[in-house]
Length: 303
Image (cartoon, rainbow, N blue to C red; front, side, top):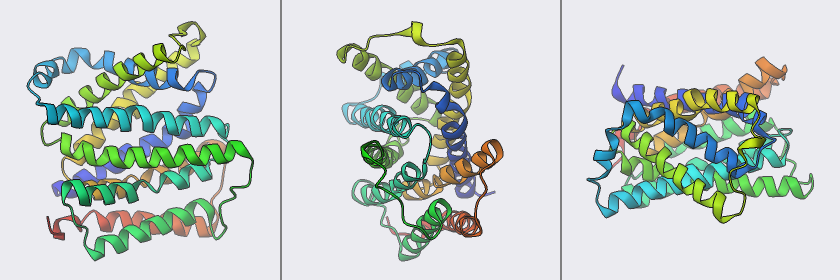
């Protein structure tokens, strides 16, 4: 298997794990403050990484200001802001009617492709843009069929839509900065650094906002869920993602991440019994085919 296809497969696997997280795991933490959830989902994996990636500290000591700035952008946008926004969006709709949140997060490739063209000088070819557009169309059909999204469900739905848009912009921008970061760090070191800096930022925010550290409100079931996330859909998925990101352009990674809504729908069927309509199945197939095709086009575009 070529490095490009292997990288695209790794990113799709990471996105699938994130879909599992959204349907099965994160909903079990709804009793906790959103900022505390984001802190714990980064702090616990960071602690578990210490025996394996402690050598990263010496690597980080050699980074220059520009590299630290890139790392800070990844942690702030992808670790703090993006995660806060998407968890808040899910909590606002109480994990019912997630279609609006899922659809709006699919705008992530738009932000990633636009920023990659500016910062990384990755000029997408017409073929890439065509297949990327088809992937978005497939994702829309998979989520809504032929219907239009219903945004008139009250202020909570509108707020959730705004949070989902913020998450899409944050994750899309973090994808591009992550690509720049991987020019300086291995995918293991980048994961360690991202989780460490995000832990520090969210710990500070907990103090500044007055929330503090209400660990007494974390139940044993919450801790078990957090531990599972830490080694699978959390740091495990990020490791896979960075492994893949080293092998594909940022714009390809952004489109491969459309496997997230596909996996979410699949797990929703397996766990909750939700059944896709024929139109939604057609949209899923269109999205998968477009993702597979777009993963082979990046090398043809001009730097």
